[in-house]
Each structure stands twice: as structure tokens, then as C-alpha cells.
Amino acid sequence: MTPQPADALHSDLRTSDAEARRAALYLTLAQIPEGKVTSYGELAAVAGLGRAARWVGRVLSQLPDDTRLPWHRVMGAGGRLSLAAGTLSGDEQRARLRAEGVRVINDRVDIRRHGWHSAEHSG
DNA sequence: GGTGCGGCTGCAG
DNA sequence: GCTGCAGCCGCAC
Image (cartoon, rainbow, N blue to C red; front, side):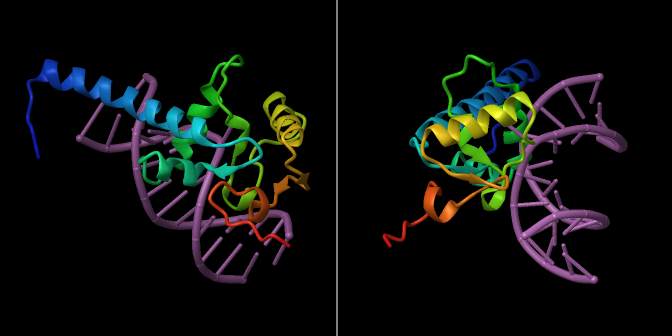
């Protein structure tokens, strides 16, 4: 369907749409179980945002410090931590991951083991 | 409506 | 396996 609403309505819908995208992102992010991790791209795709991986990263960076969302379970493709050690968020992410049993080695995580949608090799 | 900017991603050297 | 480069998407001037 291709509706053509008036400017005012259109603008209103646009605003609503933007918020909907963020909401979808938050909902999807909240679905990630403890001890599991995913990538910005994967999160974006699952949230229905397509390849808006970078946008996801930006949104996560804008999250408040008191957020309950597991933003620390989101990293670069292949389980690579995009946040550098030494930064508040970077250190926080490592600390939280470790607290959940996720071993962070050399700025990387074993997605084979902790990947959200990755099949675990029991052995 | 064109331009720049990300906590990105995949490919090539 | 790390570094460099181009591609993509959505958002803010």
C-alpha cells in the first residue's frame, strides 16, 4: 500500500515511525538472554531494521546510563568488541559480559559459544 | 533535498 | 589475523 497523507499527517507519521524503529530495537535487544551476545547488524536485522547496524550502534550509544537494556550484549560482527578498553562503556561492557559468564579474550567473544542464534556445540 | 556522520559489515592485501 | 577501503541505512543539519 502507498498512502499519501497530508503534510501535517505525514510529518506526524514520520515521527511515530522513527519512534517505532527505536521501540523495535529496544524490544529486540530486550529479547537477548543473559550470557548471550549478538552483533549490531544481527540486532538490526532481527528488529526489522535491515542493515541499519551503524544506526543501532548510535542508538545504543545514546542509551541512558540507567537503562535496563542489555546493550553490553551487542558488539561488532564476529563477536568483536567495538568499544575500546579504557572507556566507560567499553569497560562496563566487558565487566557485564564477564559477570554473565561470557569470556572476553583480546577484545573478542566466542560467538560459537555465546552467540544469540548460534548453535552450541555440546562438546 | 543534498551532505556528513556513526559503538557497522564484508572483502581484499 | 590485522589494516585499509568501499558500501549501506537512517538520522540530523
